[in-house]
Length: 340
Image 1: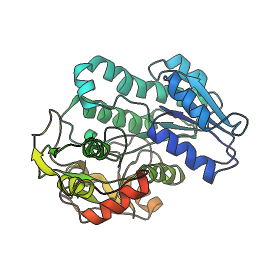
Image 2 (image 1 turned 30 degrees about the horizontal axis):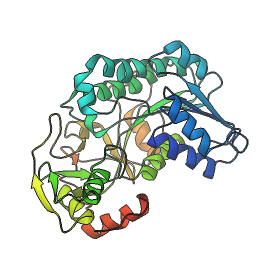
Image 3 (image 1 turned 30 degrees about the vertical axis):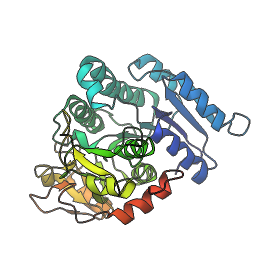
């Protein structure tokens, strides 16, 4: 699928970018070129140490910001596939710096779309977030806007052989900003208790590799216009704390501003245009301006519509991780994890 192709990853030095590059190098040894496009010089330097040029000549590193449309177009010359992972992701950062968040998450999305159309790119997959579903904070609102821009881009591509799609998933297990390394850090520093925002809180559970696998699957199967969502288990925040530090007291401290009690991926309104494609759901575009219909998506994906009124949230899931399954997953993704 990616052999012989040039792939550009915006925000390519982040957690996703590193895992995506690792996966390409493992599964597609004949990839033509992998372009890491990001604004962080130090992170690029660190990535170069991991993948030295003499051993990985297909890797290219370009300093640039998705806010800079002209620079992005230069970077996309000769590119076949764009994975758009760059974003301002911290909820509190976005609330305090709203214009900067909009410049990156919304204007940046427009620039990626324009570059793809101008440069003859074939496939674009943009990463979204659960916070874009019924958003209650600016970060979620900007990502919902970004999602809509990428979906609608299929209607302005003209006769080009170009497909835009989006993938949506929640917090990645063990990633920066995740509660898991935070709890481990507190425990290892000798804390006597763990702060729990709300003991009723639930979240979806996805590993970094599963997120990468979703993007890879999308590249191989999308028609363009779909927003794909993985079927993944949920967990209770109290079970996470117990899995990490069973002997520490759990103390409620209250939900932070802009935070939801449960993660949402598909609303009941979305169900009117959501199909079940097996391991994933796909929200289809509500307005289609070309000749493609929802029936075309159903046939292509061998799918069926979900029941009307269906909604997908972490508290109404039919798959749940337990304390024991969480511990096993932590051992797989967090080096040196142990229960204390």
